[in-house]
Length: 215
Image 1 (cartoon, helix red, strand yellow):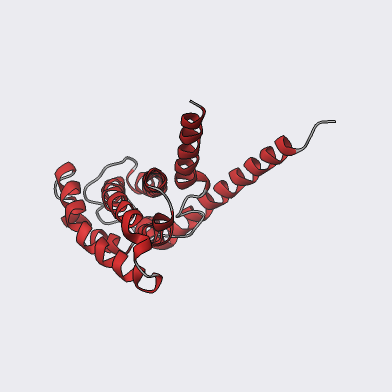
Image 2 (image 1 turned 45 degrees about the vertical axis):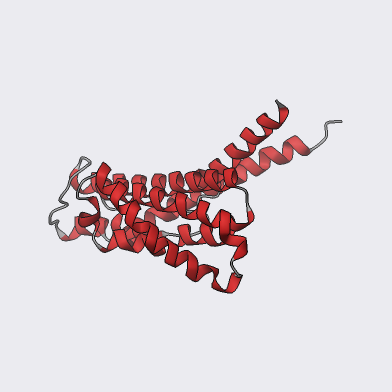
C-alpha cells in the first residue's frame, strides 16, 4: 500500500512539473515558435495541443524502450526520423477529432515534427527513465504546452475579436494587428514565465520552512 502511494505521489509530481512548475515552454524556453507564431486563436491552440499529445506520447514511450540501445551521437537524428514517421498517425488522429485541422494549420502542423519540447523529452529524458515516469512526463508536458498556448491564444483572440473560437481571424487595423504578431506572444510568455518563477520561489520557501527543525 505504501509503495502504491509513493508511486502515485511520484507520478503526480512528474505530471505537475511538466504541466506547471517545470513547464517546458515557460521554464525551459522550449517550443516557443508555435506558441508565439500560431497561438493567436483558440482553434489553432487546441489543434496544436492535440497534435502535440498524439506525437509526444508514442515517441517518448518508443525511446523509453529503445533509447539506451542507441548511441548518444546518433540518437537525436533517430528521434527526429521517428517523429516524422509518427507524425502521420498523429495528424490522422487530430484530423479525426477536428476535421480540417492539419490543412488549416499548414506549416505549423508539420513543424511539430521538430518541436524542441518533444525532441528533448524523447532524446534525453525517455531513454533513462521507466515507462510510467515517461508517460506521466509526456502527458504533463502536453498539458503544460496546452495551457500556455491556449491561454496565450485566448488573450490574443479575445483582444482582437471580443470572443473566442473564430475560424477566420480576418483583417485588422494597424493597432490591433500587432496582437496577432509573434512579438506580442513573447510579451505574454514573459509575464507567464515570471508568474511560474514566483510560484516556484514560494514553493521553495515553504519546503525550506518544513525542513527547518522546530526548537
